[in-house]
Image 1 (spheres, rainbow, N blue to C red):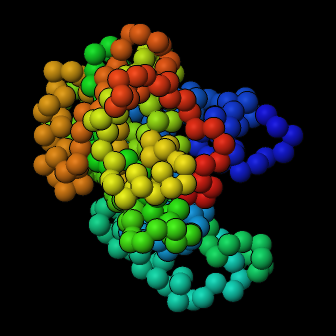
Image 2: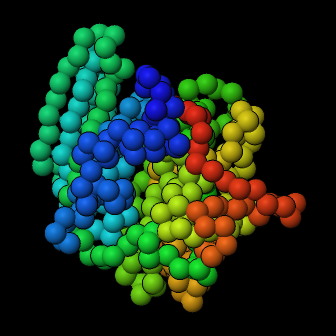
Length: 330
């Protein structure tokens, strides 16, 4: 690790992995934490997750920091095969934040929690001096009941299909353009709770190996984590990966790759090959999964590597995000 912490360590990519592997796990590691899932599975029955939110700006097309703080933790629990039930809410508020903005954020939290079927049951508030924060930071923790145990990259097998529940990179592009109006039009974040979609897929009878929502670092980084953890390869078909035209244009303008841009309302799923088409049909049957696609497969070749088969017929090895592509995306 470097002598000082830089923004790169919050990117969700290589530096974040180094921070966890070299500093946090050696000090705090245990069987639950070492699994490095979206949440911890406790006594086989409870899923527990926590997340902090520092997104800038606080309000963006398709969402805000309040909605994001609920959906982010709900989704982490859902990716564990759990039914989200309860949230905690901690607010660090900067002196000078307009009360109207805080009311708007709390109202958004209320609406998102009700929509996801969870309750905020405990919390905390702190206020810091002007200039010592950036409006408001939020931390949410969540508890859910595990309904579908045994998910994880270690369950992946060669031949398994890789699916994404919709278009890649929407949230990252939305926040990026909300900061700097570089294009005409509006890209909306995909910020949404995924517990209904995940439950539908897990309850469909398909042999689901692992679920993950590709937030910081995007789909590419998440799939790299799968491949490394399973010691298997993943081969993707670039032509099959759904990307909105405006998102692709925004990324091209700034020299970014949509596969490394965050989503906050999509999930990646690895399923048994014989169940791939049925799983796709299940995802597409719901509004939040209408643009789902089968985008690749698990292979025994190139263990730990993700290879993108490009439109031109070539191959490109994808790696975890390097550097801070877009700081404070969530």
